Length: 468
Ligand SMILES: [Zn+2]
Image 1 (cartoon, rainbow, N blue to C red):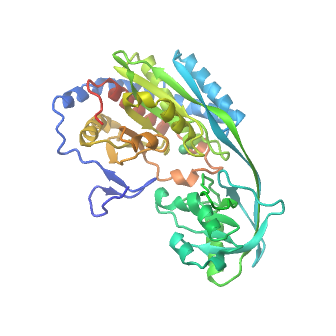
Image 2: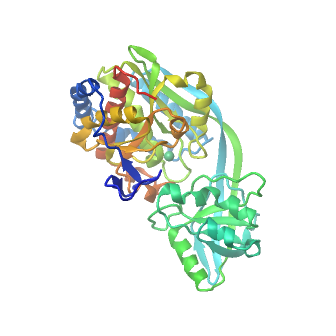
Image 3: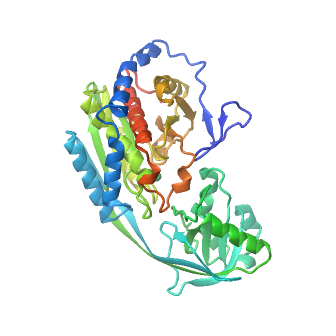
């Protein structure tokens, strides 16, 4: 995921990583160009149906009803399972009955009380969020001095004696998600290896109104698991300033949680293809969320635009050649549990995945796709995207492993794409109490729904398979 900053195709990072736009100048698709262009009427039909027809505002309304009814849907909870049942019901009401759920074991990590109080050089209570699957502290918490660490090289260069018995605070400044998130994911394990008693991280976000951002983290084998939490940018920066002035910063950290396992389900909804029903074009998003906020943005929006694809195609009687399969992945947030399970249980038919799509980076105004694949594949997808110039969604961004859940498939060479959207503010809300319906707008959701539906339809209906 690197990009040449001298290239004219380089665009400022908006989300997970810097992006590189595909140049289709030398594509030679022969008669396929005409075939793809022939979908113009059907694309317009879908756009009209969603932007100004019977589906106008529906994605937003349904998403709002969903998140207001169930709220947050953490992995392993009854709320998540009830929300899955609700989506099955909603789908059946649309006359789509080809629905299967597949069970799998998932973690159930439940957050309890969490407090962080600085009491030297002065008293201040701080807002924190424990990281996924963090262990708890003793009942009265841990009281220790804070060592501020700017990056992993800094940690390595710091003698163990200076870390031992202390609480490490990582203060990486957000650049891109991919670059910065390693401190959330690996920070506790690395701090523990040096003898720290707990690990705090400056929230992985470019902007904050005193909001801590949770997220998953991994302990490594052979290392004592220590409590791990995120603090706000404001508090992290203040502690850093105090520390750099030579002040001793002492805190008390109390964290409680439980970790069990439970059973959840992936949900598969098929709109069977008329010619090659065994071949699949998958559209997807995850139905679970963190326990904070409502999971409206992450990933309610992505799940609902994927739900809308078979619903709209059925209503418009547009049946593609191949099967459209909508998947609601479960337990994404704690580590892609649903996607891993699907990959394992559908191994024998993975050659039938013609294309796999996922929306899990926001449903702001759509701009195009982030896609992998060989040159021919990228040329075909770029040609398809030309049909979306009227809604400004024609950009193809190149990435060898797009998506989050689907990266398990795309990194193994299965062609696929994630939704490229105007998500510069995505990480303002990501994994916080602020992930609510207020992030979403009916207009953007309509645009995403129309785009997602039409792209999936064309790829599922083309006379040629997407090459691997
Ligand atoms: Zn997500």
